[in-house]
Length: 149
Ligand code: HEM
Image 1: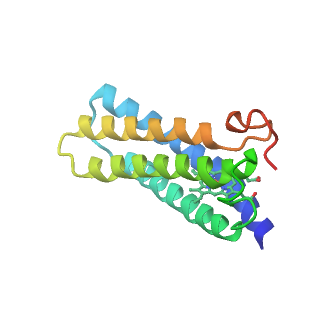
Image 2: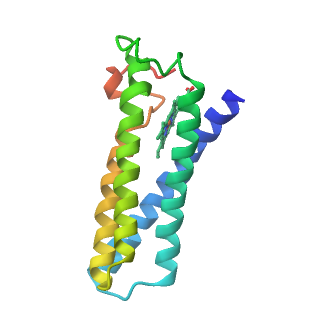
């Protein structure tokens, strides 16, 4: 069960990343060309928002299931434990909050260029934070290049 969820959470990162990139590109194009906000762009921006929340939910379940193991506030001297307990959790949460606030506020904008611009910047900041907080197989900078097991 835990293994299956880890694989799901791990694989789902690619969907989140691809959608984020597509959303950022469409928002940038819309902003720069000053075009009217289109239904197909709304779809991409909305699916990105939904995918982030699915990943958050999977992450929260994993966080609970790892309690006392990879998630352990009494073992902060272990770099990998600290990474999952504090850094991965807080940076991902912050990224998802920024993207969500950007998306929700953008829907209230009456000016389409301003709407695209807000989606562009909030999703871009989220992407940078997410890329920085993913435990890549080659190791993680927050864990001093250590393998993330
Ligand atoms: C867009 C957001 C996120 C992405 C892209 C992401 C990505 C990942 C990746 C790639 C792994 C490594 C899985 C593996 O070992 O193969 C991982 C592990 C983990 N993530 Fe996330 N994550 C995100 C958000 C979150 C959030 C918000 C939480 C907590 C609330 C979380 C909790 C965890 C935990 C506890 C693990 C360790 C699982 C284990 O090895 O037992 N993640 N995440």
